[in-house]
Amino acid sequence: MANNRIYLRCRNCGSGFFLGKMFGADYCTSNVYYKNKDFLESLNNFYEEHLFCEKPLHKEDINFLEPKFKKPQKEVDAENQFEIAYEFWNEDNEN
Image (tube, rainbow, N blue to C red; front, side):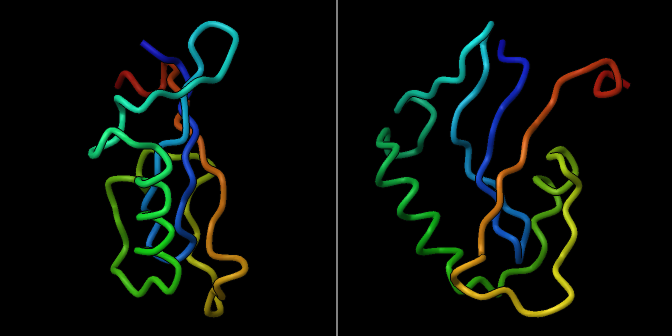
């Protein structure tokens, strides 16, 4: 089980795209984690889906990724649409 996962997050709706996980000391990823078993195709689909995102907040991803999601005060443009977010596993997550 990984103890830290890294995501690319849409700054408009908060949806996260899994990039990799830490297991021991290194981050890694594999095609087995993606619906179509292809990382690049899945990533490009995420880009296309969220580039001009107008979706409602994706509360499932917002609740477990850090830093906590804050919807920007002004409209996000395509050049600044994504950010890195992490899922940390610690004692606080067990309750």
